[in-house]
Image 1 (tube, rainbow, N blue to C red):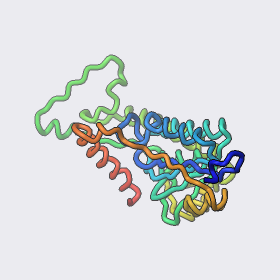
Image 2: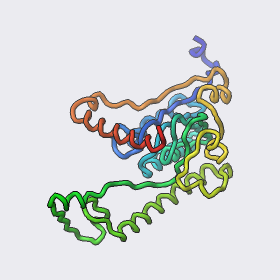
Image 3: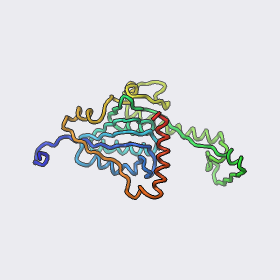
Image 4: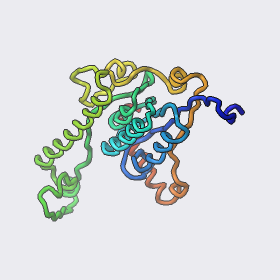
Amino acid sequence: MKRWIPFTKKPPSVAVIRLAGVIAAGNRGGLSDQSLAPLIEKAFRRGKPSAVALILNSPGGSPVQSALIGARIRRLSEELDVPVFAFVEDVAASGGYWLAAAADEIYVDASSVVGSIGVISAGFGAHDFLQRHGIERRVHTAGKSKSMLDPFSPEKEEDVARLGEILEQIHENFIDHVKTRRGDKLIENDEMFTGEIWIGQKAIDQGLADGLGHIVPVMKEKFGKDVRFRRYDMRRPFWQRFGAQVAQDALSGIEERAEYARFGL
């Protein structure tokens, strides 16, 4: 009943947002700015929280969606003067680490996988398969680069070079974000931005995280033993659980498992 008595001091509260899964555009069940925007806005604005805690478990994904989500978190944190803490579970790699770096402090488990500050583009080439089966590929374009990296045509050196330039630009954006957010905490070495990963204490030693810790004890240490937690989790609309969405979710699940498997998870 104490919380309803006027003029009494309420215990501090921490809004908890769970960010788990592959980062991808749209509303396919992964993490996107579109799907997370209402959740993030509500977490920062409802009930004047003392802090927002991000529980992270993501192998990465879209660099643009990572940047949009991270920018939204930073904007609200600065606008409302609410500190942000990130707690890494299994992995915060690539785009997952981009999200972690949006926090003011990052905490990891002793076995958390952290880092992979790089950019990857992967695909398949099927032109040999088409040739063996007597299938002719016909492509007509207006613009010499319109069919760049067509998976059904032989790979061209100029296409690979152009892709390399694109990946380097995105990589530089990633590096700038990490340097801006982590600043002097980072340890300068030749492997920091090569896509290398580190585990637990090793990530702390590199300056990629601030300490070993889990959400409840760390938040109690910072805000007192009476701190309350308000959890905000993504929920799929009821209609998405049926019909064609089931097949789409199955495919997304396979893709997601492949992303986690890159880090031995």
